[in-house]
Amino acid sequence: MKICRFNDNQLGLVEGDQLRDVTEALDVLPACRYPFPPHDLLISNLTQVMREINRLAPTAPVRELAEVRLLSPVANPGKIVAAPVNYKKHLEEARDQAEIHHNNHVAAIHEVGLFLKANSSLVGPSAGVEIKHPDRRNDHEAELVVVIGKAGRDIPRARALEHVAGYAVGLDMTTRGPEERSLRKSIDSYSVVGPWLVTADEIPDPAGIAFRLTVNEELRQQANTSDLILDVPALIEFASRFYTLNPGDILFTGTPEGVGPLVPGDRIICSFAGIGEIAVQVRAAV
Image 1 (cartoon, helix red, strand yellow):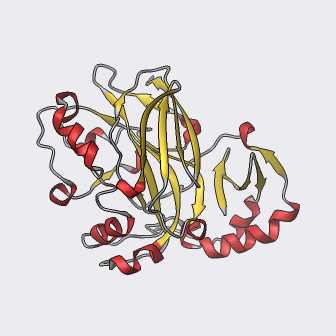
Image 2 (spheres, helix red, strand yellow; image 1 turned 90 degrees about the vertical axis):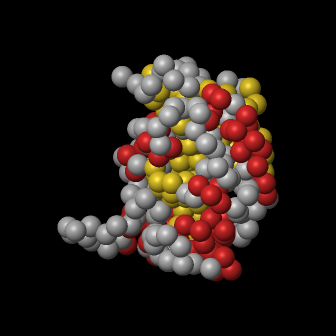
């Protein structure tokens, strides 16, 4: 099932180039009061929501995907976890290019570990990317995004995929410079996720997913998730050794070689086989 959020926090079931407006399925979510839960309510109740979507779908209004504004499929992640230098060739290019490493030591993922991005950086593809520091190099990074569906800590690799709600396309933006990675990647609009959530039952094994990224129709990145240094189960195991993963937590799994600079006016298209494609416009921050 492909589930999107669109326009004014409406819910859609994606079918080809159309969606069925199944916003009424959100009525099954429990009412909450302060203090609100530290996880995403839709993802934590995804099974019930999917059941209601199936009930509503046959008579739900149909909309053209091209006519709606796509939001991030997860509204309220407890945290955004990201994996640096998780493809061997990207590790090599990051070490070779001063414009990328900026005199910082570039360690392998086993040494440097994971990092967190600010939730305020999260947007859907229709929002686009705003270049906040045009005097610096701002790079695109195509990444498979994993959405956690079941809470857990110290999750063993063998059980890791049981904790996945689904997958999405990710665009992890970064501003180059001497500061900590987390700061430079947490700028507003620098975590693009979309175009929808593909539920885990449609992708039983996230290894072997081909993907590519173009800028103004120029191919910049092309790889396969089989090239990951730490694959999805290993990343979930690694992350959960340090903190609890909750429903709706977003995991950016890393980017391959070919990262490159963007400027206002650029148009990015990032596609993952079996998941979908996001088209992202780049503009200057106001």
